[in-house]
Structures are given as C-alpha cells and as structure tokens.
Length: 239
Image (tube, rainbow, N blue to C red; front, side):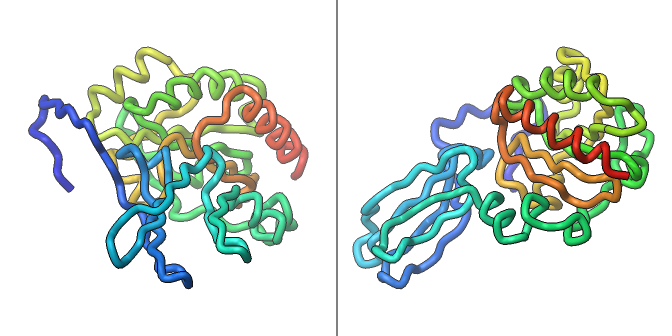
C-alpha cells in the first residue's frame, strides 16, 4: 500500500478500484469495481475478452451488493443481504440459534488508550459501527447514531464506533466536531482487512449473545434509522 509522507495531501482525479473479476459462460469478462477509492460506489463492467472493449456498465445502488445473470443473459443486481435472509442465511429468515457469531472479536484502544474488548458489550444489543473522518456519509450518520444511542437504556443497548482513520489528528478533529456520546475505538486503518467490508460507513447489529442480527452497508438516511430502531427494540425485549 502506498501512503504519502506525513502531512502531505495528494490530489487524485481518478481513484478506480478493481474488486473482482469473473469469466461468464458467455465468454465475457465481468469486472466488479468502484468509482471511488473507498469502494462505496460500485459498478460492473462487461468486457469483450477479445478486444478489451467495455460492452456495458451497470452502476449498483447503495443496497445492491450482489450481481448475477438471469436466464436470458441479462445482468441483474440485488440486495445480497435480503436474499440471504429470505433463504435463512441472516437473522431476517433464520431463528436466533442459527445466527452467525461476529468475528473476529476486537480488542482496540479507546481515545484514552485503554483496551476495549468486544466481550465488554456482552449481554447487550450492540451496534458495531465502522467509520472514518474522510467519509462524508459518516458525517450524516453520526447525529442519527447519537439520537439512537440516547433512545435506549445502557443496560440494553450499546454502540461501539470504530474509526478506520490512519491520521489520528483527523480522527480527533471529527470526534471534537460531533462529540458522540458513545464509545470511540481506534482501528488505525486496519479494519477493512479484518472485516472485509466494501466501504464506509459499515455497521453490524449484534444481539445480546454477540450474534449478527443485521449488516448495514452505507448510509440509508433517517428511514433506515427508524427501521433500525424498531429492530433494536425487538432485540432488547429478548432475554
């Protein structure tokens, strides 16, 4: 990974990211990539392998995390999490006993340097949120997270907001601006490698036993947080 010298800012006109490649049965190459370096604006390019020409491009919506070809060979995109839920792969379609344990369990410093472990949140419904100071949607999301945090008792609900900033100064500036009431943990730019998310913000809602209830990709606005509140309220009632 290339990083500029400390204190140096780089102006980048194009920051294109190749995420995945697959050769289709039609002989065409399907390239999943992004228009931004954070991989928050995903797209699929259909490439002629003989000439390298891009035959078609499909930009994916915020919730579209899976792509496939329909029987007619047309490229379609859909919400992969919803598909898993309907088939029993996530909490929406599975019993609580079938939920996946959140892993790896983190042990990260807070802003004072004290180590905070995932186990500290055991017995509570917990929203693990990954963010960074350079993430514009994170700036929109933080006030809503603060409101959500205050709507539940601390005995029932917690938020662990993990910064993936490399620059500690920018992280602290973000925190000073938004003054979040929930714990801030320091990921130090290593979180994407550990948790394999495609971009920020990314959140995982855990039940009282540390199992995954829901994964949230990107920022869906107030309506998303209204739905999240309802989901948390249901989980809080479960012993």
